Image (tube, rainbow over all chains, first blue to last red):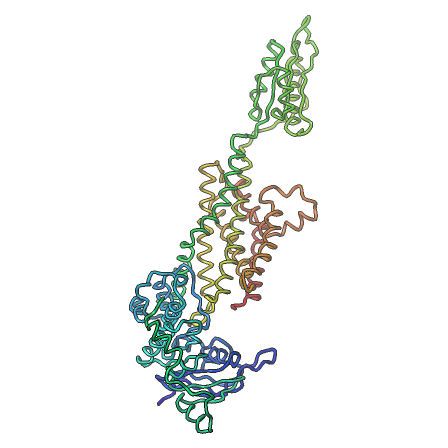
Length: 252
Length: 365
């Protein structure tokens, strides 16, 4: 498998001597869903933003699709799709108009209605973003990351604040993006989400990567160290109960 | 098409749509200047600049007829024939500037000699200007008559020639002022609030995730704001011309040129504030701090002649002073741009200052 992204000794130190990211290295393979997990303040978003060319790199290298981010941030941005943690869009523009504007900014040509259909928003084509529900907003936000047919899509906590139906719907969308051969890098606070979506995850804490492997492998390693869960894990979770009772269909 | 051009076009198109869908903002940006224009327009309507004179002629003689004829021949005078009592009462109410009483024996002859007689005038002491001016004119008429009648040669004389005046009223003074105010407000408040909202909401940050440098968005916004402000200016000048008789003595080209420079200056102020501020709460006080002194002290509603010297000196350097002064000189006196070097230099200096400051303080987040 070929790496589409190489991160080598990436460091971020702020002026006030805060070490947000402390020399992390990892690589992401083409076509995989790569998760970055960790508590708040672990340095996930800072790491993503340095890779995306949105934040200056203190030291280390990021090589994305053969390009060094630090040297050619605009060329890197041309090839990736970025969903920010809190996405906002210009007011008073319809979904189709926003998508077409973003496509123009990448010099790309799209069929905005097809793209909206892909994320399940075709019937909202002439809506304004402010009239969408939380889940719809996130799906639209992901649609804006796809206008340039990116090699990597970055999703920063895309499911935070969504109800279980909307969350599962977004998982389907992410798998759909993956099935087209697009690499996805995602941060999340939800472990079941990481287990469901990610081929590999990096767990960050205090600006460092403390573990990096496939979710199954990480669980196996933990059990191999003699770990036993405090309680018997039931074969179903409360999440399953909720979905069973309220259905999988989207409510928004 | 070049990618930068395509990006700029896309952002301009988006900015235009954002603006014209915001109907409330459009209405309000025009409402206040049009309201002011109408108020001043109706106030100055019909109330000409002529001096109101109440005339009571007790004489029936030939000389008094000549006098009245001459008086009525002065264009600046509006003569009313009324009784002494009425005139006195009107003068008291301020409806008359001067009361003129011609005595019965005015110009009468007695054994081939003129009888000495006196024309009595009274003016309102509270507003002496018009009354005194009219009085001087009457003294002149009377002494001319006197010379004619006594056949005394005039050795000392004043020869005055009428020059074409532009018949300007207060409205002609106020329109460039209201226009300057509108340009300033659309520039400073419009840009600062609109732009900082996109910044604080994160819409600007989302743009930074694309390969387009956000400066293109600033250009697109500036271009759209320029169009909007010019459209507003056009509406105000058109309304002023057709409804309230605004006179454009100078060239529309010079007038538009100063408007464009003014828009650039105040857009610069707006972007500097929006670039510096984190959110709307920081914009309001700073924008007011800059706007309010200019609004009150740049002479846009009343001339600055009455200011104490130090205040006049300070306000001489206000950008809005240069703008409103040059617009007025062009519109009211027909001056060309080369006749306004001080204003042009002043505006150029401000243009450089605001953009240097804007670039220095600008933060994208």
